Structure formats: structure tokens, C-alpha cells
Length: 302
Ligand SMILES: Cc1cc2nc3c(=O)[nH]c(=O)nc-3n(C[C@H](O)[C@H](O)[C@H](O)COP(=O)(O)OP(=O)(O)OC[C@H]3O[C@@H](n4cnc5c(N)ncnc54)[C@H](O)[C@@H]3O)c2cc1C
Image (cartoon, rainbow, N blue to C red; front, side):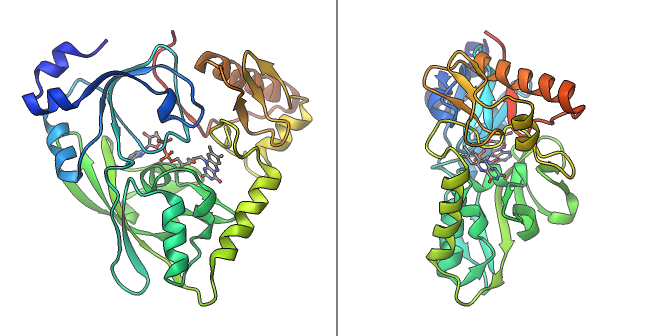
């Protein structure tokens, strides 16, 4: 467990503000998993930079938004978790088509704001229950829309607490894949959308309605667990391998959307991960396809 030693190297202020042994159950949309040794909620980007500068370099660092694509194993995370949601929450318009969005702003807010400014296509962001930071890290997308199609540049913070402004071209971008300079995290992005006269709230409502019809919205999940393999759909492969409803403990493959795994209430991270591995093994043996994880799994087993 990282704690007393690392805390001693922080100033009195940060040592008081950093929380210890914080359960990730309420910080992940699966509502499962272990605790983070250290947990910090910054006041703003400057405060976060000061914290990172003081954190001993050997302490692993994990930034999270709304934990909607994250599983922390039951034994917990040996490092410091930084929560951006509720902290880096500024968003404003830079010009007719460009906006500045901090990492903790929800995707839903970006979508609604763009609609009210007559900009699009940002409606796809409405149903993604995460933050802009998470969307940048994952290249989140839906209905043909993708976060990085709209990124002009990003502000990042490195492990020494130094800020950088980086052009989108400095990142390797793919389907649910983003590779940038190592050990840098997203503080904010400058995004560009098109003028879309006539776009309105009903465009968002329609997409949310479509989701409700096809996905188990309201159940505890992380959305799609696996990335779609080229030319196919993970959900189709899982369904046709007979895995809908497959259950371990309180975790099961959704009957409504086979790429979702549901926590019915008391699933441990180990239950969820066991379902994930069983699905991967079964799909590999039935279809000869390896399903790549979209969800990020971190931390120690119990
Ligand atoms: C019901 C449901 C539906 C979903 N539908 C979609 C969908 O249609 N399309 C889609 O793409 N995803 C979907 N998701 C998955 C998830 O919402 C997205 O991946 C989202 O972008 C994650 O954002 P987050 O803020 O919750 O990130 P988190 O889960 O908190 O973090 C995810 C990863 O991003 C990293 N990260 C977070 N913030 C930062 C930052 N500021 N800097 C650097 N790294 C950071 C974390 O370290 C972690 O590795 C869905 C999830 C749910 C529960």
C-alpha cells in the first residue's frame, strides 16, 4: 500500500487534501472494484500541476473522469487517482466554430452546448456518459462520430507538472485508440465543429431514444466491453457464441446488448473480469476471433 511514505513527501496542504484508501465503487459506472491508495480532487489546473509536481515520481498516477470505461480490480490501485470531473469544468466559445473544453466537462454538456450554438455534429457525444478527458483518452465515438475528428489541439500536463500545448497531429489516432507522448494527461482541448443550422435538442433526443431501444441503459455497465473487430461487431460474435445471459456471481452478459456486461448489484471486479475472460475465450474458440478490450482494467487482484 502506498500511503504514509508518499504522503510525507507532500506539503502539509496536499497531505491533508489527499484522501487515502478510497473505494472506486462510487467512481466507476460498474460500481465495483477496490480502493485507490491515494485520491485527489484538484481545484483547477494549476492546483493539479502543483500536486503532480510534489507527488513522488515512483507513485503511479491515474486520471479519471466519470469512470465509465474503467475497472479497478478488487485489491485496489497502488497509486494516486486524480478525479477531473467536478474540477476541470470550464467550457467556452473561442470563435464561431471553435470551443475550449476542459477535461472534466461531461460529453453530454458539450453536445447540448454545441446544439444551442448551432454547431455539429456533436450530438453523438450526448449518449457517452463520460468526460472530455475520457473521450480524448479513448477517442470515444458513436453513430459515425469520433472525438478526435474535432480536435485542433490539446493542453496536457506531464509527470513533472509541466503544461504543454500539442497539435492533434502529434497523436496517433485510431478506432478507440489514442497514442501520444508518454506520461501526459489531458487538461483541455480546443475543438472545432461545423455550423449546422436547424440542429436542435430533438436530434439529441432521437439518438438517446435509439440507445434506449438497443442498450441496457440504466443498468450498471461500462458500455461496450470489447472493441469491434475489423468488419464485424463484437456483440454479434458474442451473441452467436451463445453467451447472452452468461453469469458469474452478480455479473452477466446483457440479454439486450451482448457487448455489455451488467453488474446486477453485488458483482466484484473479479466476477466481471471472469465473465470478460470467458467471453474472450469462447469467442476465440467458436469464431477464431480475438476480442480486444475497449474497457481499461487496472489494479491488483484481491
Ligand atoms: C452506458 C454506457 C454507454 C457508453 N457508450 C459509449 C459510446 O457510445 N462510445 C464510446 O466511445 N464509449 C462509450 N462508453 C464508454 C465510456 O463512456 C467512454 O469511453 C468515455 O469516453 C469514458 O470517459 P470517462 O470520463 O468516464 O473516462 P474514465 O472511465 O474515467 O477513464 C477511461 C480512460 O481514460 C483515461 N482518462 C480519463 N480522463 C483522462 C484525462 N483527463 N487525461 C488522460 N487520460 C484520461 C483514464 O485514465 C482511463 O484510462 C459508454 C459507457 C457506458 C457506461
